Length: 263
Length: 366
Ligand SMILES: Nc1ncnc2c1ncn2[C@@H]1O[C@H](COP(=O)(O)OP(=O)(O)OP(=O)(O)O)[C@@H](O)[C@H]1O
Ligand SMILES: [Mg+2]
Image 1 (cartoon, rainbow over the protein chains, first blue to last red):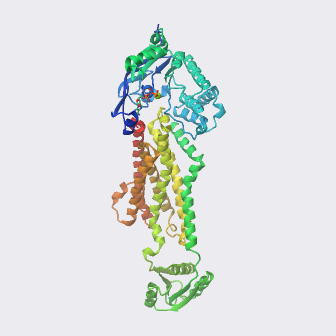
Image 2 (cartoon, rainbow over the protein chains, first blue to last red; image 1 turned 135 degrees about the horizontal axis):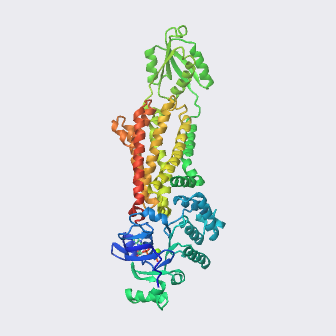
Image 3 (spheres, rainbow over the protein chains, first blue to last red; image 1 turned 45 degrees about the horizontal axis):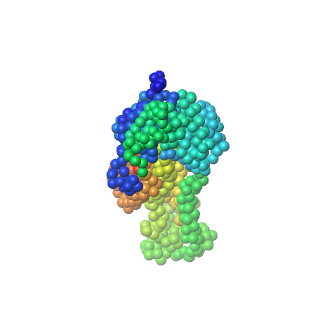
């Protein structure tokens, strides 16, 4: 049974996003169409203090959805509300209460993690003392202390990912949106990240993450939305979506239903 | 607060990277070295045998002779009447012609001495020596100098005319090297998106680029300018009279004019960079802008008569009034209006850039 007292913190209503393809993209996608519907009428809601997982194969539209929620791009149709703020009408307010992690947002390789943490803290208007406390906390938690004075350009992929993660939540946002947070991480670091997500939940934060890893969803998420071809194929609490089967079995069943046999 | 952090970051990026500092200072250093080198090759102290026509008499000729000998040259004095003397100088059969007024030595106070010189290096070097000697007594009598110098003969006047053009070119290349890298570079590398994901105002992001980049470009432009000014005396073999003899006010106005079009050029390149997808694309467009600006300043060298409308054209207004300043005029209010106009355009461009930063198609269109 779903808890009737949890309130909705993220609500997406009929989100739609169409991209215009350039010649080059047409060639890459092997299509003659000039437009690509990436997200096609997506609706879902996530609750306060829960972890919501968006699950879908490559190109399903997960990243595009999360980019719309974090106001990087605008939906063509529909709207989404984060803590009651519309991503269309109040993007600045949404940006203040959201922390977004995705591969597209890069850190300047010239600077050190220490400098960038302070810089983005200032960008979010975090007080100096609060920032110092938070830096100490997060840097020791993720083992960034050891390389906090090394230029980002000289860090390994995993180290960079940790720094990006920590900086995305520098302002202690209520809603954390992570796009494939364990991508490129070894099992040890991946565990640090998943443990941290669970802790965020314990602290009352709301987490929205995208992934194509079934086990991650099963282990962490309270609710799950399965996206296929830009549409929500199934949404609900993990138990309600899976029923008796494993998440993987449920996914293939849905996939076969929509796309026919798997090639 | 957020704006301050953005500005600080830009300065930090620049001043902690020796390579960038070198890039911005190198043009000035190179100009200085090259001009000085050319100057030393061209101006190795020549020894002359001056042939000078004199009308009237004065003991001052002996003083001049001493100075000439001290410089390693010799002088032959040939008495002549004014007509003859002037013709000889014009035809270059004489180095110079000195005409002392009647009873010059006795009437020191009311007397005058006229000097005529030709367009050759030899003539100029004698002239400089003679004037230096005569000037000792210049408080007491008048020196009237005449020159048969023709324009193309003397690099000096040429370079004086060229100066506004050189300044614009240096400023532009300084602005280009910093702005392309910082704006188009950040966009291409995806680090600008990270800032766009925060709630900082788009206008602050724009200002946070334009303000520090203008300061840095001004440093680069100043370095190039210093390079020219310091090496010109060596190149010309004489002091550059174009730059001497001006009041403090002229320098202040000159400086303001230069400082007013630095932010304009930075924001113009900034706008182009924001529109472009990559540094390569941006530098392609910027070269077109550069050619336009350079053409404009070349036109301003050739065409001397402009209507007052030039005041409304950014950069061109500064070029024109800089030229006038160097020509000895003091177009005070026009210069001030030009500074205002350039800053106004800059404001407009900053506003445009902040609009572009809010545009999904420009920032995230593939
Ligand atoms: N800027 C863009 N221009 C054109 N097409 C795009 C653009 N961004 C995404 N797409 C297309 O939209 C579709 C959805 O992309 P999206 O990145 O949202 O998928 P995803 O679910 O995150 O996939 P993955 O698991 O591979 O990250 C893809 O077909 C992609 O090619
Ligand atoms: Mg993705």
